[in-house]
Length: 323
Image 1: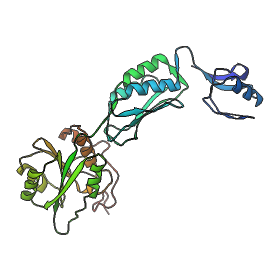
Image 2 (image 1 turned 180 degrees about the vertical axis):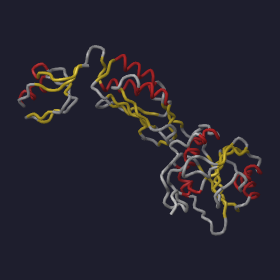
Image 3 (image 1 turned 180 degrees about the horizontal axis):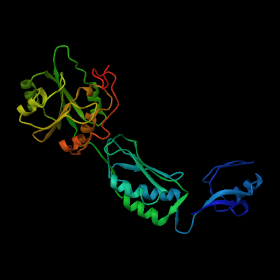
């Protein structure tokens, strides 16, 4: 692509790089200069303009963005028509975004004019959420670069839709302890999960019995008193019910006091107290992935620390900074 000053008399077919004011109105940058545009520029007294011309083998900005976006578009994503060198991918429904980071990095390394930006891996999305954008930062790019970037990004994105459809939320109770659980149910609602809520005393035996009786795709436990040890009421009840504790504690704040386990092949998530708030916390990262069929292991949770310092919740009784 050639870029620079072009005599107006010879500018037909060039792409206007900077907007220009003419007697008939404003010509916007990106406009292809035809006979009428050239006449308008001449009427404005301009003798030259900054413009771009595509070379043989170059691909225009919209076509280039479309090619890369189409290649990376996977299941659960819709592509919208490109404009001004930008093509966007939007989620077709709820889920979490799976991103092949290495593929996106390879695509962005092909040519600086070809840029791909996505949401973070495993970000929750809803219908219409913009998941990625491809922007061609010049007015075109070499065809060979467009082909290479498209191949590098092929199949790099998809939305993992919810596969678990029912949950039982077991809320343990103590006199004077909070019983608020509406935000937990709201989290499930936005993923299309039906939730039955059952209150049980905050003790190992009744909680274990409730776990054994619960019939759903997965179980959630919200204890009246925060879980503070793998032998505390929640994890102990899981083991007493015949389940397995995978992990207690996570390097995400707020959300440290989560536990994760399995009971008869069904996930069991012990929610931290911050799940009573609608604000993002570590439990969201585990809950959303499991609901969408993404396996979560203890090692996966251990790897969540980088980026795991989330926004403070003002209502928490023990803020991070001492008073």
